[in-house]
Amino acid sequence: MEKKLGLGSVVSISVGLVIATSCLVSLGQGAGTIGVVFIFAMIIACLLNMTTVASLSELNALMPNTTGGLAQYTLVSIGPFPTLISMVGGYLICNTLSCGVEASIFSYAMAQTFTFPIPSVGYALIMSVIVMIANLYGIDMFAKIQNLVAFLLVGSMVVMGIIGALGLGTGTQVDQPYYMASNLSEIVPMTAVAFWLFIGAEYVIPVSKDVKNAKRNVPLGMIIGLILICAMQSIMVFGFHNYTAWDDLANSAAPHLLYGENLLGSVGKTWMTLVAALAVISTQNSTVNGLASICQGMAKMNMMPQVFAKTNKHNVPYVGVIFISVSIAIFAVLSDSSSDMISFLILVGSVFWMVSYILAHIDVLILRKRLPKAPRSFKSPMGIALQIIGIVGTVYMILNISTDPTERMQIWVLTGVTFLILAIYAFFWIKYKMKRPVFKSIPLPEVMAMENDLYYAIRKNRGIWR
Image (cartoon, rainbow, N blue to C red):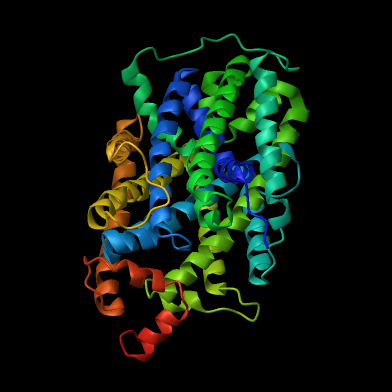
């Protein structure tokens, strides 16, 4: 009998998946813009993400053990059209974009710390090729150190945050004000920047079947994880105040590197570079492996081209591995060493992710109405209040995604055009390839049946799909 995961493991997985070096860019941007009061924006964003945790936990309780997660929930509640748009836009594009940004931050840090004759973007491209080849051979070479890497990154942030907050660093302390904003109207819009610090806790849900007392431990573990992250990053903000000028922090492409050097000199800089490098490699390995499998699963449901379902002799969906790896490399090149482009792409990625979170809340509202008596081992409390708060709060963050009106409009236009292209693709794909009503939801038993590999084979043999 396999040993079940306890609450501590759920918290560890949740924190390890959320924390990434791109979070430190958002943390630096937010703190550098308004000072220590950015913590209040972080708390608001953390609470909004807890509403999403509640909604996704309820959906998982209604449809346990589904590998597609949000895709299957939305298929049952709204239908294939928003499902295809949200999964390709809000999940595949968002994840490859954010992973590309991570790779760019890693490249910048490596180029700043080590004097090898390699251009900055070269590090990202080399890493992408290595990870791609490893995955093509079916070698999850970083699996055994995933938890260790997360522990090192989180532990380093806590230790360096405490050293900075208590003024124990070897560097020179900075004399600057605690805050540059004093009213709520300046602080609340920064929740859109803070949002990125907490996304990804829901990645624990796919392992819920292996969790002891999942009804309690999965949602509780994710909530505890979000609280720990909020506390840990709040300590970092106080450390920033003591050792890094706000303007330098806001304009840095790698604020963790800047802070590490200001705090402990070359030792701090090298420490943060090496730990962040491990974290980025681990993250990219997981992303390539996971997204290639999702593409394979969607191809089996005929929601993506069948080429993504093909496997090589190592039983690896090689087309997805290559496609995701190349996409990550492209985003890394686009954001290379540019703090403005890195922060812009993070905000674009946030909008995609926010849309998928809104859909999760909508799924709960619809399925509560349509399937009121269906068994649920977990039901989010306070009726539908959390879902309404989550939707309204997330829409507000999208509308205030940037404090710069020009940048805000650019983000809206880019995401709007992307979703429009995806909508056109989704309409014709569903109507002529899937041969499904575009806006009609699919019954829950059929969606659950899609988990079986025979589902696609049977529909193809009957001539429904070609």
